[in-house]
Each structure stands twice: as structure tokens, then as C-alpha cells.
Length: 128
Image (cartoon, rainbow, N blue to C red; front, side, top):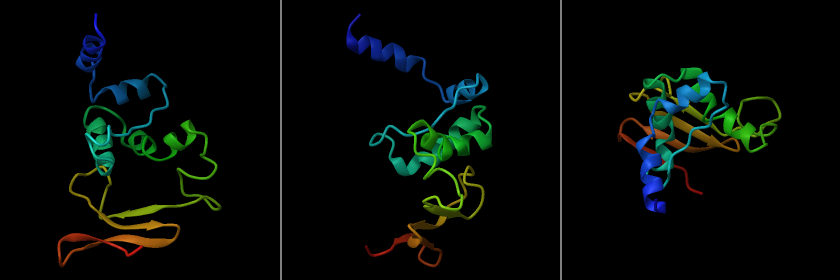
């Protein structure tokens, strides 16, 4: 078998149900995208698709917040909202896992860096 055919076989077995299967088996999971193929700003949609295929919604949110922080060893600083932690924060119009919800505001180091302008129907980024 060539290296290319190994990749093809591995891709054949990929499934959006795999995160749910792994979590059900007790595996701590983190969800990401394969940026730049699927842009990182579609991360929440990756979690939503995993929920659609059986992953528990709370586990999906943990898979894009605290679990990655735990996996890379920095959960003492990031990954959840707690006193003393760094807190980048996104305010959503509804459930983040609902494709109809949108990020309305985002804060980095306590400073608003993004807001959605409903009148203009577009996101506005703060000047750096």
C-alpha cells in the first residue's frame, strides 16, 4: 500500500458521529477544523455537526472550550469562565450550537474586538 492509499483508507472511515462515539467511550475530546480547508471561524459549526450526529451538546461546548485547554495543559488559565483566568468571551444571539444564532459581540482581554451591526447586517471589527 502506498502512503496515498493509507490516507484514502483513513478518510473513508471518517464520520461526524466519531466525536460522539469517542465521548460515549469515555474519551476526552476536542473539536477543531482542518484550517485552511475548513476555516477556523467555522469551529462552532463543526461542534454543531457533531451534535447533529449524536454528541451531547454540553460535551460539544466543552470540546471547543475547556477540553482543548486541559489537553494542552493550560486549563488553569483558559477554557472556562472563572475568577483569575484569562477570559476571551463571545456573546451569542442564542444557543451557540444553533446555526441561526450569531456571534453578537466578542471581547479579548476585556476589550470589545467585534460586534454585529444589525442595521448594516455585517460584523464590525474594532480598530487595533
